[in-house]
Length: 457
Image 1: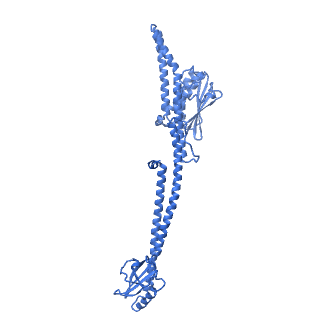
Image 2: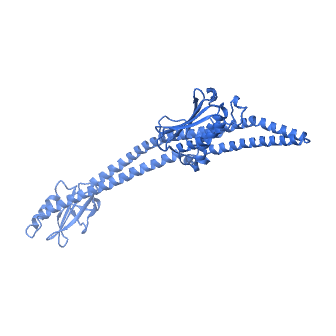
Image 3: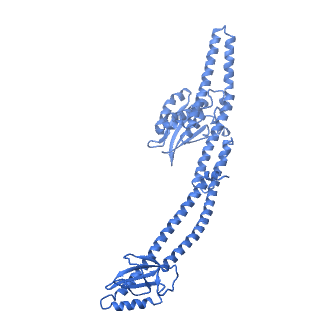
């Protein structure tokens, strides 16, 4: 892997970014500690110098000045020589007492190097430095200074601490960054490999989950849901292609036969017109089949979600009952509607498609059941859902066939003699899925029981 390829990897960039952030944070914190500690020590040294000046200046006066000269001379010869410097001069700048001579006059704090000073007693190190200041007196000036070796030692200690700390922090951060980068890359690869297999045609591949139920697992579940929908759509397309080839072969063959018969019997006008009318009916049936397929495809693509509004299921089902009550009576059936809801039953959906959903279920019962069948629509409410049940007392659907009837163009063997394309329940399934609902087929003992569950908005 080249450096450019490494820089393109998100885990590496994240690890590098966080490492840089932590190193910068450590340096910033150290700088603050370094500056604050240095300032504190310098302030302490200045306080010490000011205290010494105050104690010596207590003898400053016309009559006590000579005592001050003696005290400065005594202090200058003490064991504190390596730590303190003193110089007492008269108003003309002549040296009177002290352990240092010839320090330039100044009204500000000065940093003086031992190597640049003329010391009468020198028991310190050449690279020592002193913080010193002059103070005016009655008959002259007094200089007091204290060495700042504490500051130098502290700075040296902090610099070493920073060096060791940076090495330790860098190693720790490098190990952590490497670990998290590898873990992140592993999770990314867990996504990439299945998706690469899907792109190569293996639509059953799925993204594994870690079991931690974290956000990445949630994304994996969403991706797997998407792949599941994609697999189902592809399988539906493949199945539809096969079913179309199988189910349309017969009407197309019949259409060709009728047209051929019409061509051969062109002399008989009545037979010719009958053949043409039959051919037109076959064409209309084929066209209706393709229209239904296109409608299902449009619904499955989710294009109709833009038309969702709040719909009252209780009113919608009552309208379906009113429309199909007469149709049921014409077939000698009885259609009823009941509800346990005391108020509106609001769901989000496309009113036209919802009517189509329940109309198809009712039409299936009317079409495939013998006369005298009881057909009922019942609406109930349960925690979080509305349940709509469409039941009949007809022959029902065998349990082994209930998972197949939602396939496009699938028809039960006994239903092949009746009108229809085998797309009614496929359309029902597509509408149910579009609305985030669930549908189950069960035994009504006797008959079929279709239950549709809608989430409450």
